[in-house]
Amino acid sequence: MPCFFASRAPSMEQTTKRAAHCAALGAVAMTLFLSAAAGAGLPERKVLRGFNIIASPGHPFGSASAQRSLAAARQAGANAVALVPFFWQATASSSDITRGNDMSDEELAAAIRQAHALGLYVLVKPQVWIAQSWAGEVAPATPEAWRAWFANYQRELLRVARIAAETRAEALALGTELTKTVGHDEWRDMIVAARKIFPGSLLYVAHNAEEAQSVPFWDALDEIGVSLYPPLRDDRAGRIAAMRDSADRLDALSARYGKPVLVAEIGLRSAEGAAAKPWESAEERVAAVDLRVQAQVISDWLAVLDRPSIGGVLIWRWFSDPAAGGPRDTDFTVQGKPAEAILRCAWAASCAAR
Image 1: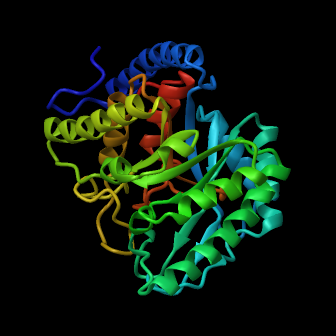
Image 2: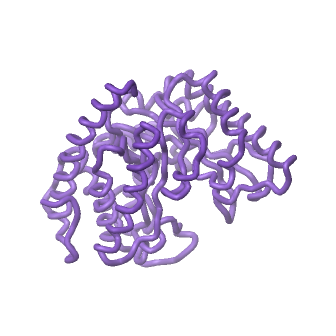
């Protein structure tokens, strides 16, 4: 079976079978890539597959309910998780940054321990949260404000890095989708400071392949990170073409720097029209439930990213609430939806007929 779908929509059974087939081919390809990488002096690592795990109100990490949710992610075939502590700033031009109240230091440490107890690889992946905006708009107005922003950001990052080091997390993202900041020299100083604290793998998560191509400090990191939310067309052929364009660019980056690419985020809402703007949240647009579009787009991404340069794929997202999601939910989580079945089939070879 080909690792993508024909223009005619397949049944869900065909979808899950093809996802499993593509995953098997991807595992073979990645084994060859990692063997070659080891021969070139790069660290060998298992292919990562899993979820960005978000703390839900009432289900803090360390709790029994969060443990059940992580276990469910493991049962879905995940071998890795990205844990996401949020940094908050009031506006995109503000220099003040603080840790959010979504996850305390103790809860982050508990999350890492709970994930490790399940045999999961842990990436600690801080993200900046700005009300009515997003991290890609961070841009202080003056040189002095930029210096203050980097000093405050580094303070909060190193606080997280110490927790990640003490609990032996495997990887740390220095930043996520901070598009307008990457041209500043302070990033190299931050990499040096982080390495003094954190002994694991360091990466940065660029926004889409376009930003990834502009990041000037990949040479100082252990791997290339990227989130993939390019606009996608409704027709299958056009959608796959856009996905392949992104993946081809990542191939070139991997070859240029001799490092694997971790796709640290892909996903979209289970809502009508979600493919056109995969980054769009439920708060931005009210839409009817469309479980199939989420399942098919994620399945297509798995197929297109089935290539040697890709060292792992993490889905956005999964909540610490084990009852999150479900067939009436129009948000990003895949829990309790056909998209979860797609992933379970591809990752855990558990392909229930539908």
